[in-house]
Image (tube, rainbow, N blue to C red):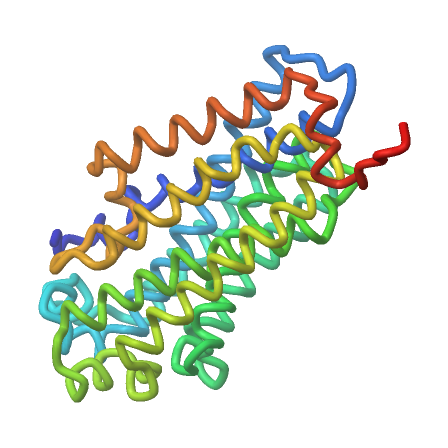
Length: 310
């Protein structure tokens, strides 16, 4: 793990902003007569930059405020703030600077976009800063941090449909999907530390957690994700049901990675290193695009009773 000041901005974590693209794709599917041009491409780039800058501001306070707990983690004990003492005032100025830049790059976006971006900032505060520090509370830590998944999705959506929010089923699907990813990460971290006492010192929520509990909760979040996703897909285009087996395989393989001894799921920004996971993800994307352009009326038998008298 890098231990220089640059590392605390976690530039490699910007990969997580890939969740912006499902938001864009979902909005494109629902919006008719969308024109792809240089202006739209620039807006997407600015969206990614603004989200990344706000994410880095959250990572900054996360690492600074976690420095006392990180010393109990086998790898994170090498982080910059664990080794170095830096003035809080200096850190706070950099934090505000990144927030300023994030909003500067989004100045031409809709009010709704800016509100969601501001909520992104607030999530970083409530998750990391006392007296809130929601990361210390079991279950709440996973569910609250997973809101970032929804935020990234909404930022992408609002680029295409700035005056309209997605259906609640879709928001809940991405929330539960984020909870699944985060819970598997917790599961992998807990197993990696392999000492319940030290794990509790590193992360207070681990005092409550056990391996079995985390595994069961991961399964539950996966079921919720599939449930809410299916509601949306059946409502707007039943053909998307064809892609669900690929999505299910993606979730199963991610859990398989979580079971590895030194799991990549502990560092989601490095998931691209798993060739198998990337292949499955590409298949999911291809299946979704395929389902977006085909029409299969026969699939209506899944939702309409069969009439034997006709």
